Image 1 (spheres, one colour):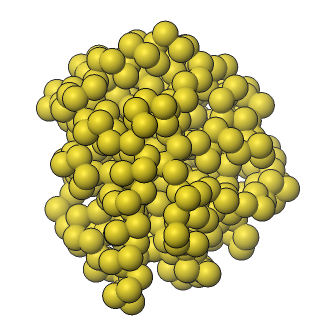
Image 2: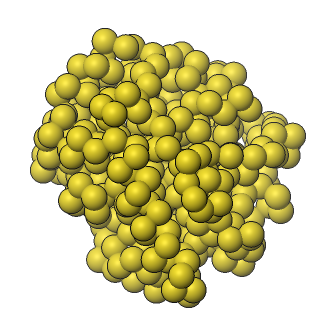
Length: 357
């Protein structure tokens, strides 16, 4: 199979094809932004961790796993309470199969990873159901530092891929999108998306918004990742191609970045088909409504896996995260490998992890 048959394009199709053609067999760099919002500590809001106490370790543990193949801040790789692995497994498989370099950026993680990383100096976000997420100066800091990092990293590559790990981030993304005037429905890390709970939290948070200013919206109902990555996009897209690797959280980044300004011709969102096929969310129409950029989705073929833990991604668990979709797309573009070859490598990595437990 031609690997391009694993891709599907949404939004501006011409720009999608041009974007793909321009970066095929080119240099890629994956930047992994880790962050945290205390919103994730609300019971039932996320499955990004084995239990409530371990959630704060998920972002640094994801970063460590990508680098080392194991974690240092916790004993094993991040997983759901019933043992389904982090989507970082897909990201690691994609990066290693294509020799795409990567680095970690700490943009407000509660716990620092045990590896070299770029430090933004940002604090973690507060619980938006009870208080403002950030201060005004923190939002400005996030955007400014994001712009510095984005410009420099983009100058090193033909395509800068930006992924994230922030538990509970779909809830803050929903709040930001609604505050900016978009009728958003966002995905979840679990098949039974806790939509009512998310909407209740968001509605409470939106009551604090008194005037329509995009910086004030991030301050009150956002999280540190959104302004930081938006800053990266705004400067990076002037220098090289930028692929936002993620699902509905990256639509919130896109919505805020559209207020800052960025180069649409050099920008795309890369995600998994598990996001674009999610009927509880409106990812595809959101992207079209926010900006004239393409969304590119990839089917990693995990429904055909011999392992139930990998098949779970195609059944609605996790769906996306740690830049999985964007890195899989990039690895296929660099190597020419299709989803069958990707699945073989993912199963090998899954087997390595879970036979060693």
